[in-house]
Image 1 (cartoon, rainbow, N blue to C red):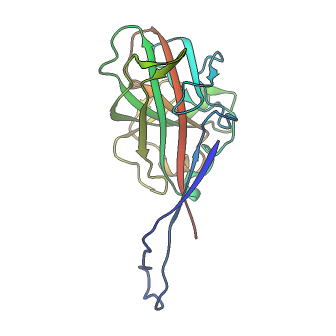
Image 2 (image 1 turned 180 degrees about the horizontal axis):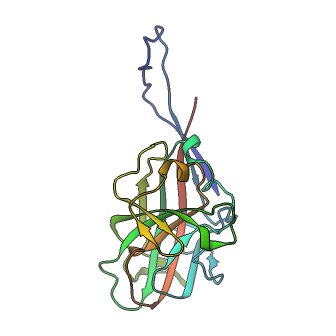
Length: 235
């Protein structure tokens, strides 16, 4: 587990009113990164319960891996009912981005055109009843990692890691362009309360494929590392 604090070097003058001479406003950013070297605070999972910590194949160090995954749309996500820096009131915290590192060791059939999607859900106050969950998803313009490894270090596989980072307009009161409403029952439409969702994010997921489409069922060997979230902190 790592918490990194980065202070922007440039001072930003207050725009609302004339500033006192020498007075500046500085925005700080905090990034929380789950490295799996010590803990798994977000309860990150591929949804099977069979994932395990691979101590040497990460990016770097440890990573979370599932080498016996059978599904149409794999999802690297936080566990339902788990509170962590990845959940809660994103609007008040001023969340600005989320990211993850992913590796595909094996995929049955071609995934050359499969996009990576982001899924954000609210559990509606019932974390273990998935039927009433609702939220939003965004199909990115990035393709999921392609299968294969880049070599071996002794007996340890050197995975072909791909890093993904995406901006999140958590303080926006308008429905962001490209995001779509989703419910666990499968009903998808283009409207919803973005502001309400940002005040209570219960679940974060990175999905292989567009969740509104039908994909073939296949076998996978996948790994995830360094899921991360960045938010603003008042000086």
